[in-house]
Length: 227
Image 1 (cartoon, rainbow, N blue to C red):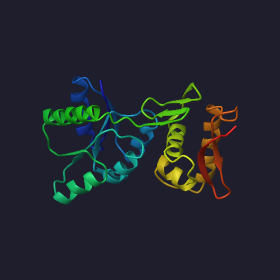
Image 2 (cartoon, helix red, strand yellow):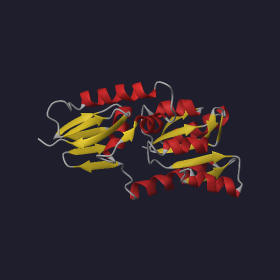
Image 3 (tube, rainbow, N blue to C red):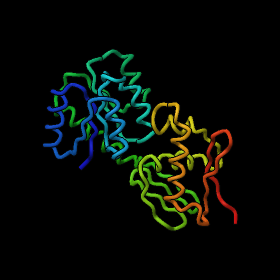
């Protein structure tokens, strides 16, 4: 059954929704803040996200933009606001549906089921296939030169980002903002360490078809190696 990430700061709503959905057979992961939800995304990839708009440490619509850089899972906003401009903003930020509080739990389930069916029918499966390199973002696996590897989530996201534009330079600022959702003073060193681990996990120094090169400006690129 599908895994649902429920991001809601109202403890009563969280308890009622999670209890109902678990009885319906879903696996529900709960977060009461943007920070906790971002942390949980490093641990698993949800099949669907129920996202409150007003959260104690941020705006759900802003968080949805970050979420969209990590997964194509459907996002249903849960909010007490029903103004038309809020609906439009929700869709523009990457949301797939919008339900206004209070709502009937059976209606919520119907919305969830509809989004999951639509997502399955569209085969929205983030995958990159290059010669000798396949990256499956959902399963977390990489096949390089015929060898299959399972990568930690952040290393997988970095590789996916570089492979989406092979041969193109991407700054460490862009990589850090995409993976972590913000930029900090030590971001350059953090990305350097992550990429070093990524190269080691994929054995890229052992006659690999691909290499991750760096520039003096703090840019990285994935490119084919010509032997």
